[in-house]
Amino acid sequence: MKRNGRLPVAVLGAGLIGVDLAEKIMRSEVLDCVMVVGRDENTPGLRQAADLGLPVGTRGVASLLDAPGPIAMVFDATNAMAHAEHAERLRGAGVKLVDLTPSKVGRMAVPSVNGTEVLHCDDINMISCGGQASIPILHALTQAHRVEYVEVVTTAASPSVGRSTRLNLDEYVETTQDAVRDFTGVKDVKAILNISPARPPATFRVAMSVLGEGFGTASVTAAVSAAADRVRSFVPGYRITACVVEESKVFVAAEVTSTGGRIPRYAGNLDIINSAAVHIAEQCAAVAPARTGTETS
Image (cartoon, rainbow, N blue to C red; front, top):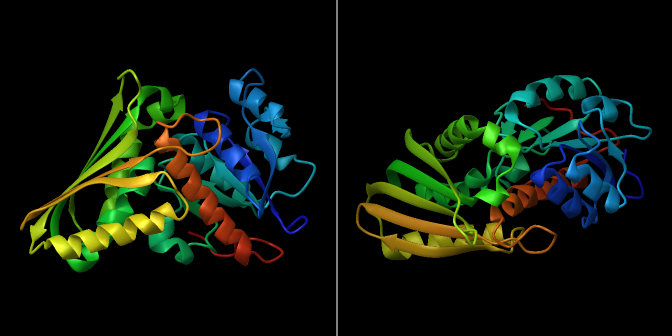
C-alpha cells in the first residue's frame, strides 16, 4: 500500500491535535498524509488543513471508508468515547490505527520504552501527553530501584487543551495512571492534570514524585539523563528541569516546548504526543509489508 515509498495515512479529527499532527506528517519522509477528516465543514481545523493543500472530508469515518485511494493507517485524534466505534469500523477495512485518545482500546505504547514491541499491532494507543512525558523517566527509575509510590502532576496551558481533551478528563487521568502501573510495575500510582489559566500561558510540564528505597544520586541521575536523551531523539523540546534525590524520595520535573510548526512553544503537550505518534507510525512504515498490520492488540 506504499505510494512512492511512503505509507498513505489519514488524520481523523481536526482539532488542535489533529491539525498539528497533519503538519508533522507532512514533514515525514516515510508517511504521506492523504486526508484530514472532521464532521463539520466549518471547523477551523479543516480550513487550515485545506490551506495546507490536504484533501479534507466532513463525514467522519465514512469519509475514510469512501476515500478514492488506499489508506493504510489512521491517526484517531477525536475522543476516547468515539474511538471504540472508529476502531470497529476501520478494522474491517484493514486499516491500522494510531490512537491519540485515552481510550485504552489498543496496545499502549511509549516509543522509547516499548516502541519496537507494538509495530505489528492493529490498534496502538498513545496514552496521554502526561504519559508520554513521564513514563520514560519512571520506567528507567523502576528498572534500577525499588519504588513503592508514584505521583505524576501534569500542567498544560488552557489554550493548548482542546475540546476533545476536556471531554476526556476522567479518561485522561485513569489511562495515565493505568499506563504508569503497567510500565513500572508500581501499584500505588496517582495522576493529576492541571489546566492552567495563567497569562502568559505556562509551558507544558510534568512533575514526578517517587517514593522507595536506596536511591542514589549517581544512579538516579544516570537513569533520568539516559531516558531523557532517548525521548529527545524525536521530541527535541523535551528537557529535565529538576532532579532532586533523597534516600527514600526522588523528584523529577520535565518541560516540553514545541519546536517547529504552527503551535506555540508552550503547547508541548500537543508536540510530545503527536511526535510520539508520528515516530511510532514511521517505525511501522519501515516494517510494513504490502498490507499493514496482522496482529491484534
